[in-house]
Amino acid sequence: MGSSVEFYETAAGTCPVREFLDELKASDPDDFAAVLAGLARLRSRQYHREPLSKSLGSGLFELRHVGKLNTRVLWFFVKNRRIVAVHGIRNKGQAIPVRDLHTARERKRDWHERMKP
Image (cartoon, rainbow, N blue to C red):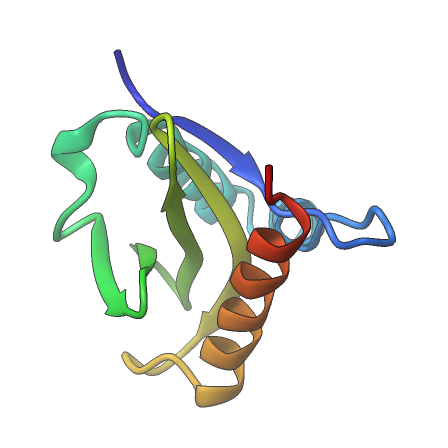
């Protein structure tokens, strides 16, 4: 049995990763297809490590795709083999900007606070 991949939603009901993917699909369909395929691969544990995925610390991971721009989707694990994608970015450099890490950590914290049983 594999993992399921879901997208974080804000308290207001917006879905930042879905919006990111919609913009990516319009601007770079090839990278969009590669990122979508990468998200599908995350369902299998064998892809939870490099080169597709990498730990960022604090329970966050990145799905990595190298194209014209580096495209990343930041995500975390939750119980019952669930993966929650919280943030998407594109940049030229290898490092993830601190503000994007902060955004992903904040969304992870928010998700845990609102999804408590």
